[in-house]
Image (cartoon, rainbow, N blue to C red; front, side, top):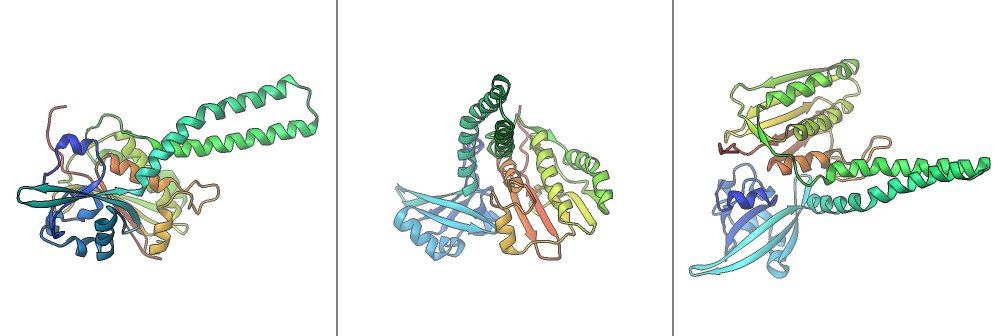
Length: 319
């Protein structure tokens, strides 16, 4: 990590950054962002045209904004320029499109939840207050069914719209992995799926909200089990990457996904499950971002899928 963002700023900002000079050469990269890849120091000295593409840089130069796709995710880029005594620098900020959607969902959940609850109460009161024909009772039943359906959708949206995790603490990565493995043991056995847990002894502590990490793993394991209709092996893993960061992984031997299918699965409303909201991976990505972690998915048809969540190095500090 190049260290050009203060810890205070990083705690309130979930974007990734590049700092470039007037020739668009990379001076610094923030390792939390999509722009920084796995080895941000390797970008130093490269030209942003080679990192982002010439069309993206041209759009940033002309309009101050651009879109950028990395893997299966889309990002919105903005740039600000500053003149220093030794020359001009530009700060390129990358924000996941999902973050904008999460804020919008938060507003919707806040504005709709109470009126929706009131509507259901009024519908039930109407049935009790008035003598209704069979047709009238049928209308009331259909109305309450639709209200309940919207309530379920609102509940799914509220998972995505959680703005902040609870206060974080240092936890061992083995704890949530083993807990989730135990939770799904019976379900996996019924599906002829073997759950394997592999925790590298050197895997370090992570600073996290334990409940959110468990929710993230539950979503990933649920998806993995559904991707193995004929059985297989589900591996829950904690390891260190080359930079000493702790990585949590969920790997299955299921049907896998093409690049296009993976892109669709990362978008809301694209669930292939009957009645699904298509918000599962959005919840996972949101939790990863709240923990300043990087999420990567690799998959191929017939070869299964691997989801990796890479957490930042833990800095020992008070509180």
